[in-house]
Length: 288
Length: 165
Image 1 (tube, one colour):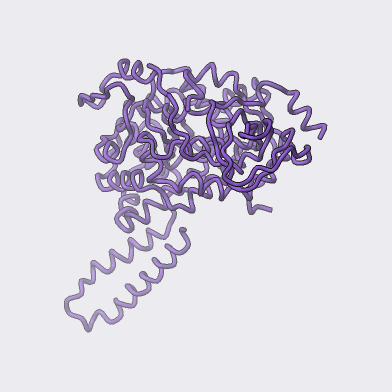
Image 2: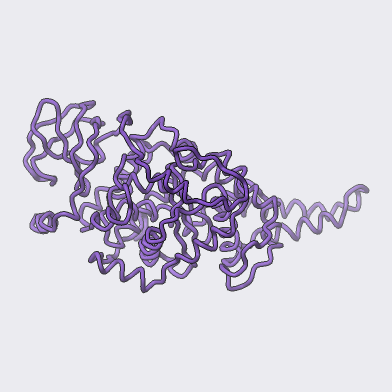
């Protein structure tokens, strides 16, 4: 995803630079504008730094929390954080400031934001039967963070403006925490909302499914937790509480058939479902 | 096979009961006596057979077909199509609603169902930094996470990503 972008940017950069050469012949061309555009493009080819990624993700999590707050059940919040944090230890980015939350919403959905904030609705949680299913969903979201899928979508949607906004963000270098209420530009907030409402590239969803199964299995869970949740979602087709999820993701049946080929090799892994404590800690769990 | 049997003897945590519901076979599938590839085949269910789902165990789902005894089929050979007419929602969602304070400063009438997250609620959302602070308060340390894992005897293992060598 990022490579073609860079190629396009460097081609555009090339065009702009060569524009300077024959600028003398074109009286109306604003030299300063070209110089500043070129500078932005150079800036844009750099990756978003990790502290910037985290700050963007915090802002985006705050937006989702603006749509629905956290469920009041503190024991549940801490439980989901521990399961999630354990899963992140099986990944290539174990030291991001990972946070997990359960949203007080009957909608069926889960969200990841850059840098490690992950939210799952109570509506989805109570449709799960055990911790392995929770692990499957959280691992799918963790994969989006690992692969920076949301940043890619924001770059795609916002282009130069997004990257210029990122470049001008004042981010404390430790990243995360302590800078609540940091003024993200209105423009950047709209970009986040657009990505939340439109969803990610479909291939990124399939990739997160494939990686999600791997991460949950690494942690020692039943590998079939995520496919099981997808089957539950399949049974929800047409139900209003899953409208946004269905409009932002490939159909569950497509995701399941994409997984079919991969799942064979997971038969050989031992994994646990962990139902008992899940049922205790998730009031009303297993309700389809 | 021994390993698998041991896995089953492992018991309760491994097998899951699913709420009674129907599913349809995606293709012709073998109905097995036990949830293993090399278990005896009891019957072959033709594509589009509607079965009652009993429970899942790993990659296998126990089903009751209309014209055969119950047995096991591969989980991913089933489609959970239209079987949506199930009861959900006891009063928990509404209890949570009552308990919630309006931190955004606007009055939100949520009714009996919990707050919906839709395209328009997201479009209209103002960033809620108080809730973000709460979210951070509940964060888990690595040690807490590992403790939770070991209390369920979860053991990590090495599994490559698809495509990794």
